[in-house]
Picture 1 (cartoon, rainbow, N blue to C red):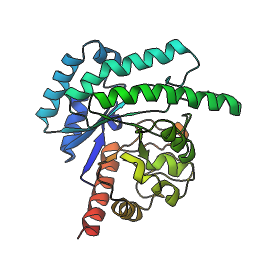
Picture 2: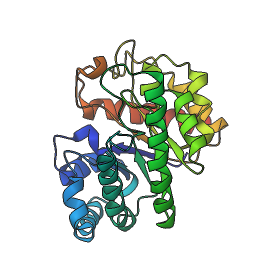
Picture 3: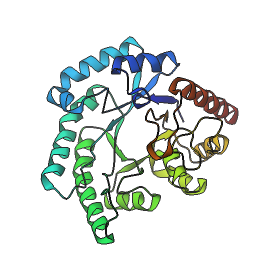
Amino acid sequence: MRAFSAHTWSFHDLTLLEAFGTIARLGFRWVDIGSGPNLNALKAAANPERAADEINADLALYDLAVSDLYLLLPRICSEDEERRAKERELFSALLPLAQAIRAPGITVSPGLAAPAAVAEAAETAALHRAAESLRGMLAEAQAAGLRLSIEPHLDSIAPTPEQALALLAAVPGLELTLDWADLTYQNFAHEQIAALLPRARHLHIRQTARRQLQSTFERGRIDLRRFIHDLIAANYTGIICIETLNMPGRHGAVKINPLLETARLRDALRDLRDAAQR
């Protein structure tokens, strides 16, 4: 692994410039940028060149480089063809931004699942629609020199390793962004998550505990030493992004101090990495 990054979503109550400054003061040289509160995707898509100039100026101010761009496009599997088309159009419009800020790749959700339980046939149809959307998006990303990955996560149509791998099989060239805490929260064993590393382009991590999508560092159930060992064994060469949730309550996520928890996890991972590589 090359280095560690921090995610702007950890500081979604700040402007993008303020988030960059906070992340840089924590000692990071890499940053994951996500669309949402501190990056308005629709506004950026309307003038991607201007948006990129502003972001690049802010990155340069704090000597940061982009490790990933996460675009929130939850309707790529929607039954509504018009909604799917609008998501695809937004993705296409933001590719020049991703290129200009020198993002190595883009992460997207596989698409959000229906709020209530749906029949197996409907779930299969949603996965087919997601695959169709992702095939077109991947072709565009590759033409722009960018890698594309999906993040298997709660509330998506592909929250499990099995479903995520099924999408990868349906879209050759698609990769994974693994959120280790999300999969741990779903009670997947460490070995099941580690088995996905050969398909991983990018990693997110924070601590999690039983029935808590986010926990404090002390209560975390992720074995960080084993995590680092498996990354080295899998020859993972990407960046590890520390992404805390600044939204307590969601799936039992506890309220934390994002500065403190980010620093604690940064120090622990760095020390374990350095010790393992001696």
